Length: 467
Ligand code: SF4
Image (spheres, rainbow, N blue to C red):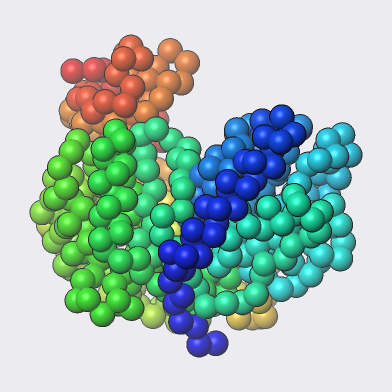
């Protein structure tokens, strides 16, 4: 399906601002300060979308609450990556009939990737009459108008047309974290990995203009944020659709040169598009964290081909070797799928070999689960579940051993960390490479970069002492 990017016009956005004002007026006339509950499922892109939904709600006069009970509007921002996650959403939506009965003016909206699937929005329309509105990710920017329509007409709204992917700038944002800011650089994906639903529900790749991204980064730095994560489904494709001669490495370099006390991360990368230039850029700028999340998914070339990943394990290793030659301290993390349809024991062993060779700092490990609507869902899958579980356990055991060895190698070293919270009697912080560090200290250190000497470790975290 051919799709082209729509840039939402200033006039269309002004219409949304006007809708926010009308919603405020609607509640003021009733003497009510409305409250909203936004619940997010899935990935960081959804978290970033939810921050915009909260921003639009705050601009419409809503205060945020952390429970469905008594909320005047509930927004469930859903994820379509796994089918069992979808079942959980439907279960939770069903349970909302009771909260709505107790609070009849409650309005319920569903949005996010699940709503980009026509079968899902149809099911909501016909089987969940207590849901007032549904919008897909393409229609997120229209939320104020949709909400206003529901409030003033009482009619249900469905904004799910499979439109060209859109880019809307200047939507209000209410960020969930005071230290770490997500900044989307692009939306959608063109890759069609055979197990993934994202390109079908989030549309084709479309990049934001570099000046809009830089402007947002400057704003969050000025607001005191200490960490910026540039976000996209496949950030390495950034700029290809703009025709400006700027790629993701150039964009990172521009952000890394902004004034201020912050560090810079990015996610997620596709190995076929990750360039040596990007590694050069990471090595060059002190503000860019020496961490790379580079999903390999399988260590076997036949499986990679059936996954439609379009790189070989040799090409992947070449990239990793290049990165490590520039930055021996580079923290590498990855995603891996165990038990892809037709994966043999030997092919699984190739995955273990690749893990041994790369020695990741951490892995996000998944047992294959078929996702309706993707090619992999109809592939022959003769491997019994018990066998997949056994492979999964072997892989996790291997990675846990490597993670612990890597953590042990930190003992005695001094690292700079960003203090981001408290867990019992210890402060929690993250290294440049994203490792969790616990140490004793006062709350005054929250939000600061400090040096900590590592004294001990577990598989999952480091223990240290403040310098
Ligand atoms: S790169 Fe592949 S796995 Fe990642 S979002 Fe695109 S299709 Fe899905």
